[in-house]
Image (tube, rainbow, N blue to C red):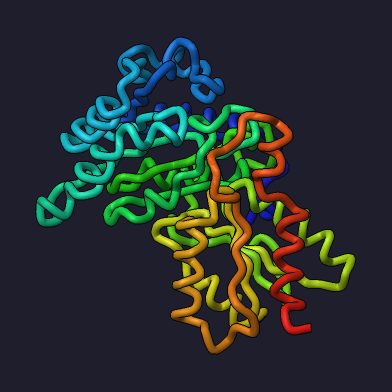
Length: 334
């Protein structure tokens, strides 16, 4: 089902997240939420607003400022049959809990010979654009996709927020669900009831014939703006939103590469060692003979995220830099 096929109900990205949590808590008594300030305060971005008042302290639990303990709580609860949702507030804080995430949550099923299930969902917010500076603005999804045993999700619109979150919470494996801070107020179509978007299936946001842009998170919207700019120049851009970064839907991207013969990958994380490098490697392994130009990457420079609004704005890729990247692969040999 595509956004266009859903009913015409428009809500915000953040409200889609909150609504989905509420409906999941009503649907399954084994689900609970835990994290810093998720309870009576409602979360630093009010993503959990009203849930503690409705469901109480036992199902929407405020925790100490201790990310390792928060994830450890979730792992233990999931291992004994509950379905926890634990929040790490900022993606930067994933680093504090990485031992629990990578060495415990991701490996438990493997180390128990497949007999253990771990229906744990870790929610967090990533990305720059709010002046939150170098320690609260990072995009670290490349760290996470390097770990076998995890599923990593990054929705780019309110419809996907709901469908992907439901799939994460109902999955019997550890999932990491990332919201983009700057997109929390963006609006889109969202049905009222619960629905699932299968993990590992990309979405072709826009069809085109000249070049494929694979865009992640907030960069999907920027890619759409770039596609409109390039359409005025006679360039037809296909846009693919992976939605799930691990597992990654390489088949959809390869089929697009065979059609357009040119690929540009866009992400907000720094270019060096970013997820774009892994996607590019997979494309060239599967579709090298179809490519008419080297795969291009549009990403942030190799620097911490600046605090200055002017510098931060220049740091984050946008429609103009994406359009320039597309022109680079189109006119490379001209």
